[in-house]
Image (cartoon, rainbow, N blue to C red; front, side):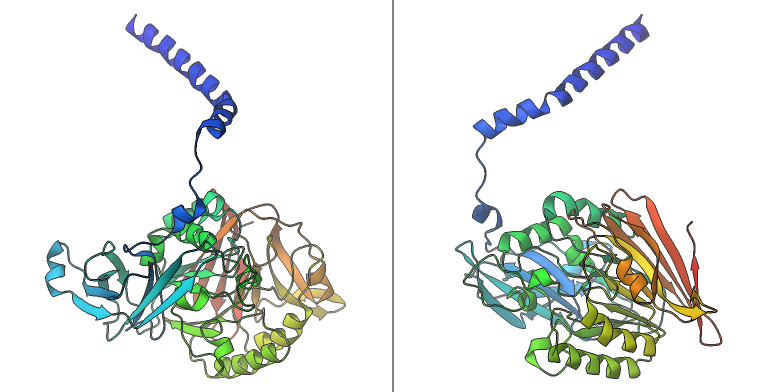
Amino acid sequence: MIKKWTDKRWVRTTLLLSAAILAVPAVNVVAEQLATKMPTAEIYKPSLQPDRVILTWEGDTATTQAVTWRTDVNVTTPQAQIALATDNSDFEDSAMTVPADTTSELATYLNYSEKYHSVNFQNLSPETKYLYRVGDGVNWSEWFEFTTASSEAEPFSFIYAGDAQNDILEHWSRVIRNAYSDLPEASFIVHAGDLINHGDADDQWGEWFKAGGWLNGMVPSIATPGNHEYARISKDTPAGLTPYWRPTFALPQNGPDEALFKENVYYVDYQGMRIVSLDTNLRGENLDKQVTWLDQTLANNSNKWTVLTFHHPIFSSAEGRDNAEVRNKLLPIIQKYNVDLVLQGHDHTYARGQVVNQNSGQKVVDNDSTTVFVNSVSGPKMYESSAAVWEKNGAQVDKAVANTQLYQLIHVDGDVLRYDARTATGKPFDAFEIKKLPNGKKQMTETMK
């Protein structure tokens, strides 16, 4: 009798839950009538308490680590503390205090101002776990953890994400969190532009930081600017790269020697890989200068692996789009140095492929030498997919999909690079392996059919 009664109660509960789910739209109508929407300015307004904490690099990944955070304008003693990680709280006794290297004040379109503070921890030990926190000496963040890189070419993994851009908190948060859940040992995250929709919208940056949450304070970011980092929501904001970029990200200043390229054109060396960021929003003479710098940067590259990241794809994968100037100027350098991976965004579709060679009248992919090009999207904004630009310009799409949010997990181990693309729910979608051969060539093999 007990089991029978339990079964009946389970059926009744299921029916009640089903009815409740069906009734949600009606409940939302009531909520819209009775609930009060919290003002955007109240949600994202800064305080004395540090927020928007994010790790980046300004210099050597084995011996330095940069961190940036935000407060309100009343903070006058910004500082960080750092200590070797221990298995108890005794590390606080030996924590070293480091005053902020830079502080920048920004006026927002939401009628409040805020400050961004940066510290570059230096003289760290390679392959060492540290704890740090940021604040003003009284108001502190939680203790975050990071591990410095090895000074040698050791195995590592990283995450690559295309455009977040729209409905960031609502629809991008699960993607970046799932990526980290699948790869908690990630050494860094590559963001291929259009992190937000309007470069000067403080609430959109607030969504981006809230979506990533504490991941930003634990896993360093390597970001490249997209066209929406140049877009404006306020008529009072000057044209150009968002005023948030340089205060938010403490990045290397090893690009072309002009202010225009500082912290948007740069490279990072990590355990045998050189990752290069270009700003493909800058065209004409300003793209020419990047090409000259890129040629020199790749000519003097002793790393086994080379990855480029920029926003506008060499081969567009969206219908009706093409970046001919970017392709004509960058592709010769990419091919000259046989770059391994090019990670891009912008087209709100997924496409992965290679340049092809003419062989007996047929197009054949040369898997021994060609670069792998990827366009991807992690946010909810989608376009129609097209391979037309690839096919017209001597390239071949090997894997493509539209209307799908994705994230990519990339693993590097000696002579082998493994690439794994997954959908927003974690389903495997695309995978391949690049192997460096003893004769100096590469072998690219698809590992998922």
